[in-house]
Length: 489
Ligand code: NAD
Image (spheres, rainbow, N blue to C red):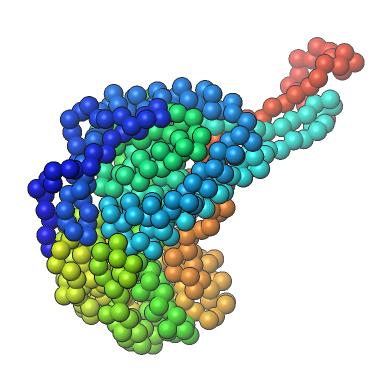
């Protein structure tokens, strides 16, 4: 496992994007960007100072004043153009993702496509912002509601979906590990006709995040990342009076009942555990095998693992790429000490880059590190239980509640599971139940701080606030002095 830190002559410089143009950082602080498949540094990204964050917020504030007055028709037209451009250039976007994140090209394309669905949802803005109207709520009085934008809102995003998650967001602080996709998005939005300043990118680390959280002109913050940072961001943002949705980590359990189709469950477990090298907040990381299903299920998964092609994501033949950094790869590998290791991914992966092969651990139980922690890598744990009730208890006692799934042919059991599972996204014979763009995405418990999920209808709610207008047109016949509390009858 090698990591080459010596800098090649031409390291790509990744700057900020403020007021519709690239802005070179002035702090002198930078972070390295690697190609995880080779372990070589390919670029360096500027880290913003509080002053640079302020410049981005001020650019957004100026743009907001005119952007909020742009007609819905014009805004929808721009979104349609963005949709067309992202669609046309999805392969270019996928290559950027693969070169910095490591995920294989087909997976990167899938990410861009899911981001595209959110943009398509936004094309329906005129319908989404329609409100209610009550004529004659009281004599001569009509009441209606409108939704207005909050103001400058910020997004802070993780490394694992460098294109899709930023497509949910305005003043954006992307992950410093794979920042190029955000700059690519900014350039594309400009080309699509988005006015300068509406979308800004500040790269950086905790300094930039804290500046966003403390900035008096930022009205709301959307965060996606690990649970400890999500909690920190939520507490700090709300203490400053901001609206905040902070999506955290996950440990998603997939329950397999004895009546499940074993091949289907094994295919699903392998796809959902090892896709994107397990670096998905909706990855299946724990299999809960109920009763007699455990042995045949583990056998079926074991048979499939050697067929997963691991290697550089730029090669279309590969199905699973490397992890994001050498440190993260080593941390993930350190979990292969707990339980009964059935397949050890350290034995079957390329030497170069930050790779770890698909790994399988049987006999994990609560209290073991590999059961309790979010591993965020290609390690699938199995826990064996006797009954459906034991399985649901594990799901509900988990401190996380992002996604969960049940595999069964029993409709009654599936319905019961949907009723009682304490998680925000539930799959029935679907291992990664990421909602389509016209529903909202988000977990429960330690997977979400805040009360609104992201994108979809709840995303619209989050970024806007309601106003109710009570209106009467002058009619001398109904005008009189009345000091009583207004009544509607
Ligand atoms: P992370 O929490 O380390 O980083 C997320 C963001 O927070 C980055 O922009 C980073 O620069 C910033 N950050 C990191 N440390 C900080 C600190 N001390 N103070 C302020 N800001 C800080 O997460 P990551 O490793 O980039 O991404 C992986 C995590 O994200 C996993 O836990 C995964 O489950 C989670 N995730 C969750 C969802 C979801 O929808 N719930 C989606 C994707 C990823």
